[in-house]
Structure formats: structure tokens, C-alpha cells
Image 1: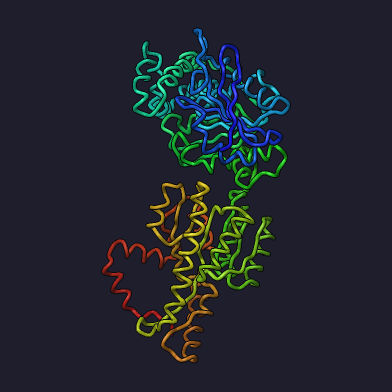
Image 2: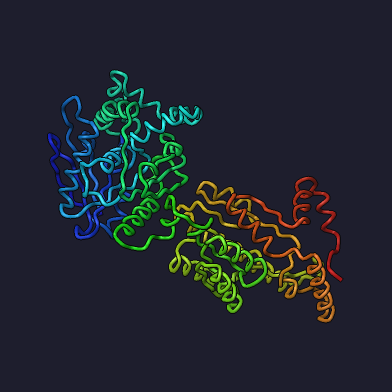
Length: 536
């Protein structure tokens, strides 16, 4: 990071300011929280610097900035004044894009909901720090509504607010600071911010709002700021985007790529670019279909369950990438999806070919972005007794039905983990579900049962002459047609699995029965496996 440092005076303090990037580009100002310094932003700073003019600074009393004097030295008015001094120094002629975390976010809310810095801020991204006025009104609403549970959960996470009001608290926490690799001076001085603003604002909240573009990032595992505390924030900020991510308090350290990407999406949009798909999906109050803005990748989408699934997602507003080994069939699916009023793209791919799948996954990410949903649907049918299967039969089944799922799961799941996705990947593996759960990625195994699709016309029956295979194939087609459990019913269940993050979804009655038997009595399942159910 090739950053330069300067000192900016604000009243009786000097602020240590770091900046990098081209000053002629959009300026992004990062404000840290307590008990941090601007060093907390380094991973995000480094990722934004190639595209923007990026600025961070140590707030008064923290890091390399000087310590103020006086009984009200850490009031929000002083903190906003410091922010204004920094903005005037680093971007005197253009408004900046403000990003705040923790107390940096609290003072950011103060800056955008008052007239002090009017015209100097173009957008605001708030992370783990609510407006104190909103928090005060939230407390009153919850009390009136009797939501004692939500109040107690938030109070449990905010116990330190009351503790900091105890005389001598600053000295105590300063002594404990080295155990957490924190600067004792920064920790001691920061207690003043709580004492001078927190209690008065929570007990006497003001009616504040902003029309600026505001993006609220909500780490759902934050032990200090509960997601519920942001309920109703749209009353304060009607021009709002809300993002939720499974992460803890210091998300700029744990998920720097994600934070930088979300900041960039809002900055670019405010500067005139069309909204990114994920930003559009995060817009609060926008009228859209249930899955509008989602990108869904489906293999084996040229017919049967794959085509029905593609159309089910398209009908709900999702963009669809229809992949199939038959390009004509894939294009037909894409055409039908477009008729439902969404974007759809056809791609020829052989799921059994590792290099083909790697090229496919890379092309999807480059041309369309990281998918929100992946349906590993491609499959082939091979029937007959175990001993009649030769090596080529097994290789064909494993290459498509197993390796196709492995390739799709491995390649796309990595993209989704890197992005910090919260959406679902549909894969046949409960182990994968457990492994990816910590990244907020759901995994569902879909067990269709006997579904009337074109796979019956292409299935092979091993160990039989060609004439007998055709006879068995025609018999299978008749049985499936009489059964007539259609692909669209499977597609509906797949969509439901995505929306509700269901682990295993048996669809047809026989699939549900076998799932029940497998859990109730594996021995019965072994007996059923001996039955020759090949159509005759």
C-alpha cells in the first residue's frame, strides 16, 4: 500500500491522515470505531486503492492523532467537525463517499443527518453502528410493543455502555488493553465518546433523517449490535440499501473482499453506473419479483427437470444460465425463459469434462458475475443388474452423475465463498452442507423420484441386445407417462429448497417413502435393493 501521511488540524487536535490513489478519482473516506485505529481498515483500504482515492484517519485521541482537552472533547459535534476538516483537506472541491464502522458509523450518521456537512458527502455506508437517535427511538418502540426479548438481547451485547459510566472505568480498561494487543491510550480516551453522547442520545432521541444514498451492512453474528437494532432504519433513510452477511463485528478484517466490493458497488452507482445485480437486490422498498436480481446456473437445462427449473426461476424474476451438452436444447430453454421477462443465456458444456467445467465457471463469473444459485442437474440413465455393467457403463454414469456434481460444486462454491454469498447451492451432499454452513451457503439434495422426462428415451439397459433394450426403453416410457409426475413439480420444490434452505427434498411419493424407510430401517432398504425393478 503506497499511502502518504499528513496532519490535519481540527480545533485543538491534529489528526493523522493516510491517503492513497489518484486524487482525481472518487474519494472514499474510511472512519474506524472504538477501540480501533485506522489500521483496522488496511485490508479494505488496499483493495479500494487501485480504483479510488482512499482516505483513513485516526480519530481524536486514537493512534497517531493527538489527545484533546476539555470536558466535552469527545462529543459527536467535535467528531463530526474532525470529519469535516479531513474532507476539506483531502477533497476540497468534490463530495466524498463516507464509510463508517462502529463509532465511525455512529458519527457518520450524525454527519449525514445534520446540516453540518451538507453537500460534502455523496453516499454513506454504515457498518455495525446505528444512528444513536434511531437507536433511542428503537428502544422506545420495543418497550411500547412489549418486545422485552429483543431489548434484553441488545442490552446483553451492550453491557459495556453502562460499565463505561463507572468512575475510573477508563483507567481499568486501559490496564486490560495490552492483553488484547490494544493501545492503552486509545482505549482510555475512547471511553469519553460513550460518556459524552451515548446516554443523552438514547434517552432523548431527535427526529433525524437523510435523503443521501445509504447502505447498511449488517453482520448477523455481531455480539455488540444486534440485527434487530436496525429495524425501521428506512424511516430515517428512504434512499436505502440493506446488506446482511454472516459475520462478526470486525467484518472489514474477516471479509475485506466483500466489504470492498459492496462499497465499490454503491460508489459506482452513485457516480452514474448502473446498479450491480447484488446492489439492486439489496435496495429497500423496490418492487420486484421474489428472486429478481438473482443469478441461477443450471446444468442439464436443455430438457426435463433442468428446463422446468430454469423456467421456474425465470418466472420468479431470476436471470438464468442454461447449460447443456446440447447447445440447441440449451438455447431453446433460454428462449423460453426470456419470454417470461428475464435475461437468460445458453451455454454448451460437458459436465463430465473438468477443463470444460473450469472454463464454464470462469466464463460465468466474468460475463455474468458470481451465481446465487447453482443447480447441478445434468444426469444420464443406465439401468440393469450390477454385474452386467461394464467399465464404460460405470465411467459414463460416474463422469456425468457424480463428477459433474463435484465439478459444479467445487468450482461455483469457491466463487460463492469468496464473495461471501448467502444464497443456496443445490448439491447432493449433506457433508458439503455442513462444511459450507459457516459461509452462509445452503446446500440442498433434491431426490426427484420417478419423473416423466426425456431421460427415459436416452437411458441404456446394460447386458441386453439392442432389440431388448429398445423394448425395455419403450416400457419405461409408458410407465413414466402413465405415472406422469412432471418436471415442473420438481422445479417448484427446487425453488422452495432455495428459498427455505432445506437440506434434503424428496419430491415424488416414492422418493419420500424411500427417504423415510432409509431413516427408519436401513435393513428394509437393503432388501428392496435386491428387487429387480427394470421395466419389461
